[in-house]
Amino acid sequence: MRSIRFAAALAAMLIAALLLGGCKDSTPSGPVAGMGNTTVTKYVAIGNSLTAGYQSGGLFQSGQIYSYPNLIAGQLNLAGASVGSFEMPLYSDPGTPDPKTGKASRYEILSMTGPVIGPAGAPPGAPINLTLARPYDNLGIPGAVIYDFLDTTSFLAKAGPPRNNPLFSLVLRNAVMGKNILEQARALHPDLVTFWLGNNDVLGYATSGGVSPSAPTSSAVFGALYAQALGALRAALPNAKIVVANIPNVTCIPYFTTVGPRVAASLPAGYYLRYQKHGNTSLAFDSTRFTEATPPFITLPGQTYALLIGHPSGKWYRDNGVALPAGIDTTKPFGLHPQNPWPDALMLDADEQAVAAGAVSAFNGIIASQASVNGAAVVDINLFFTGIKANGLLVSGQEFTADYVSGGLFSLDGVHPSSRGQAVVANEFLRVINGKFGTSIPMVDVGTVPGIPSPLAKGAAGLQVDPSLYQTMQDLFGSSR
Image 1 (spheres, rainbow, N blue to C red):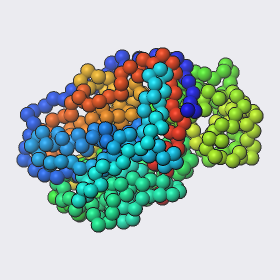
Image 2: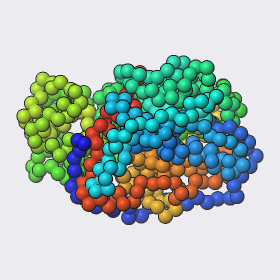
Image 3: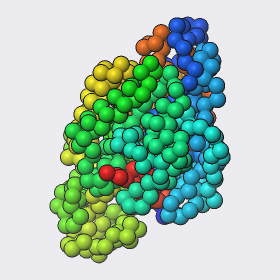
Image 4: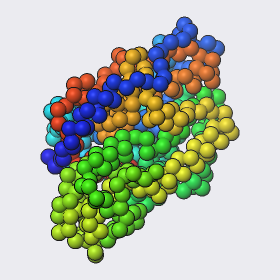
């Protein structure tokens, strides 16, 4: 496995994160469970990988069953809603294959010493619910952007460049059940719908370091598509209760916040990290010691190459099949010389962070406006995750933070919630549903949901993560626009 070993300080960071005191106690509580005067007999979830229950780089049954929609469905039944069996496009463990290796893409803890994290090289699982004679209740499609909601070709696999994603056909299967997500949702006649799309319209830009795509979906295009999507949903289901969620700031997730501090601590005295700013693929003179008011973020896959800083190396170019651009000289010390700088694709610089934040702000304004027009409730996930990033979250005596691995909220890919993170998200939806519709649906008991093994926080050595994570993320989130 190609990997690096961070300083032992990371282990101390992991342990410290577990000991932090939280700012908010979200212990499930409230009145006697019940639906009040609200009737719910069918619940449908629309979204992307967050809705699908995708975590740790893959879609797999033991994670999907803890997707926030499945947890919501269970709590609805507890409250007397009688939504019945919540059907999903389940994929047997260890889950979906990596399109390049054919092996299961799921990230696992390969060793508690380190820890060492990466795909286990196991054969993939297989779909186990394809014979369902109706659309799935969970219509979350990993990789979906807002455009895909009404796209009548989405039941086909989104294959080939710039995106290689057969999960569209896994979820939608064929046009007989509906030519797009809207038609399949409408066929189920739901009276409760959760709608969480738009994340990938900025996430693809961010996870690629602003390279592929080179910009988020424009706010004008997003606004037109979101208005069309939510308006079409309301027209198709005029009496349904619709709950939408907005988009969290992508820079709050550990995919962006884990590696930079480790690199900053390892820089030799008097040296700066030389890096390529957005759009630059060659000679670079921009530099950082990560002390600016807005320091650049290094993406999680960048940890693979951090140990090479200061050494003559062209490993990143070789690993990713990138021809050496004019002006690059890999005999120079990597990351410390303007002729061999840190690659743009592994960094979100201050300007790129501003672009991503601007897109999130604009998108969330559009979501709030369209929710009001269409009578939908809004879950402010952006505010929620921002609060966790700043202060942590205490749930039933367990502290959650936005830290990688030890924070407990995010899975091993640093982007998607863990199973317990999904439970936390489910409870935010349930709070809004209860407040909007006068129900008393009980909260999910987060403590009963599996978490990342606690000994992981006590590894004696530095973190090791397989570098294929970069390509896995790009395969999933790369733009189809």
